[in-house]
Length: 276
Image 1 (cartoon, one colour):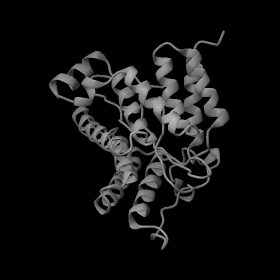
Image 2 (cartoon, helix red, strand yellow; image 1 turned 120 degrees about the horizontal axis):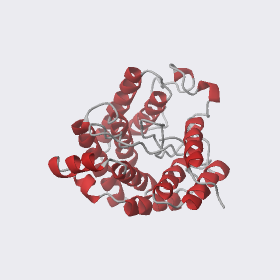
Image 3 (cartoon, one colour; image 1 turned 60 degrees about the vertical axis):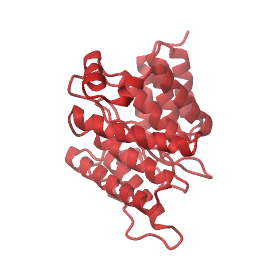
Image 4 (tube, one colour; image 1 turned 90 degrees about the vertical axis):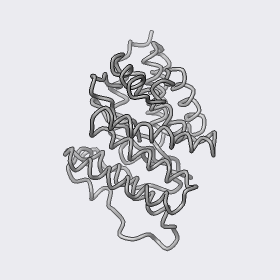
């Protein structure tokens, strides 16, 4: 499920959907040439999962409507974070690249406004990182690295405040996966010629540490499980990867883009050696 990158292609470096009954979180997706992934959190119930037929529609607005005004019981910061989340999910369900990019740009605008209103909001930091990660899929290497660095520093800032934060660990884990799947030439250019700090520090071991922490903090999040399964697969531990995928199907919470996540999980499972 992790793509192989060419010299000029550094995949989108991150982003999510709802979770458990008490706190249905939403982790945003990471755009990849092969498949779409997802990951992030929210502290209120999200929209109901659309029927599989909705996935991939060019206009998913019926399934994921944009609110017209913040509810009296919610702060403007929370409202803007909700809007950023919804815009990212709308973008994930769109077929047209131009419409998708505009939806991600809208999410970034909302998240920046939320962060400007409340600089201490970890949700606003996460959704800004998620939106930038999605937008990184629409540009060249320098554009992707610049946004990737922003995601890296936002994730760092989340973990500095809350070392056990699942979203912060998910962001860091996905960044490490993306970097470790770059080809050697692209990594050299990114890490040495462009001076990207996150490129030089990335490793499969760090990806695993971050994603294990995310799974521990939020065991019912499908995207944490899927990302960890990818790390196990990439490092030759197929049985452990299969176990995470099985848990994804058996014991994680549904989200509006569950069909996309499950499709990615199946694609990874089919690439593994059969158990036994």
